[in-house]
Image (cartoon, rainbow, N blue to C red):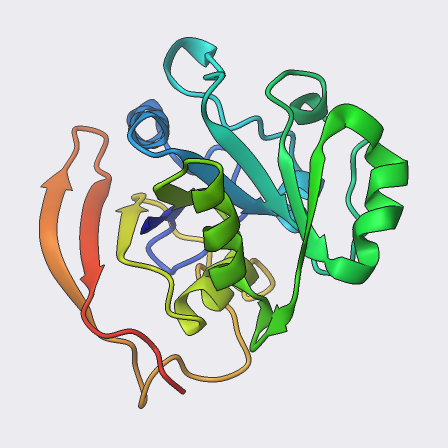
Length: 216
């Protein structure tokens, strides 16, 4: 399973407020990467803060592409969220003891799948196995800082595609690209830059490979 973490940040590494952060060029790149992968994954926080549908170019929702959401608490906002109103309905990954509750809340609007706990959250390795059983062989992680941290900490990420916008926040209360409880390496997780491009918008698109999976 090829796993790509994708994000756009300010020059100070903030990913919120997300509205207005990336340009149309960055949006186009995100939609392109969705077309190139079999599934997307976001966290409940991303859904809570917006109304993402994970569409591709021209606003299409492919019938054979999985849109998925992971929630640790089971407290998933769903009223008025467009993702639950269009087929194919999303996959919801949650703790096993939250499955029944979410099924009652969502009915046929989503497929609910239970996961066991691992370090730094639910087991994303189990999530990958589940996706593979549905014929998915590549995943695009479009999450917030906590999901990004869990994915890197659990060693499932192969690449990071990062767009740096020519904008600064400076607000320490805004969320960062990766947010966890401890360092990902000793002291860093090392990446290898294999592609870079400067867009006319002033944004810089960087593509990294993970050189060594986290094993702490």
